[in-house]
Amino acid sequence: MRPSPLAEALWLTAQVAGLSTALLLLLGTPLAWVMATRPLRGKWVLEAIAMLPLTLPPTVLGFYLLVLLGRGGPLHRLTGLEWAFRMEGLVVASVLFSFPFALNTYREAFLALDPDLVQTARTLGASPFKVWREVILPLTWPGLVSGSLLAFAHSVGEFGVVLMVGGNIPGKTQTVSIYLYDLVQSLQFERANRLAGGLLAGSVLLLGAARLLERRGRAWRSTTSSAAP
Image (cartoon, rainbow, N blue to C red; front, side):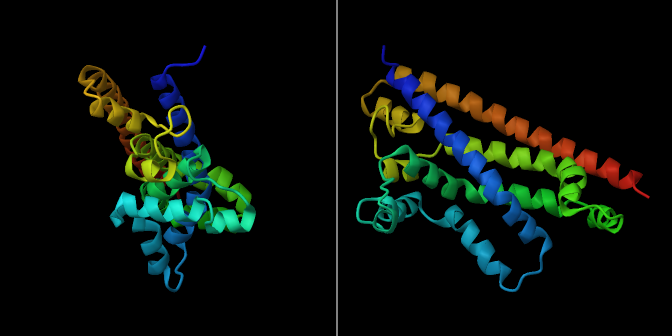
């Protein structure tokens, strides 16, 4: 038996948000580390590009992604792939639109890290991998998880970008935010109210967890720094 349209929309949204959050963590962590610790020339250009989705209208970003990922676009000409109106396109759009939210939090976590602890570990002969495993990640994981939670929550609520790139195909590209819009358009306000209330409660829980992790991370770093010789 085919799942209900709401169940399909929720499952698709969870898939897109989960995949995009994992990609953001994988791609954003090294970039945030570079932005926080490396005095690169022209770094402001990199930061401006990374933060562009914060100021760019979602429909503009969605339009250019549609051109990039659609039939006849650069991706299609180079690889034969066509990701517009597919889940892959939704993931790409979600990653780009949520990138600044994750990157800012990751970078702040690295900026709050005491560089003397990292330097001491290197002086004692620890390999780069060991420094990351035993010094950097244990002290910054609350910030990394917090940024990932924010990115996940932002991905769940995306509307304009995913609508432009994926359209509104039930069971294929209809995310929960688009499904809610359809309920309102069809004047099903009672169902829309229940769904919106559930999304609101979920957002509050995710944001509360993110802030709690940030507070614990600050307290942990403070304790570690004061205990260091």
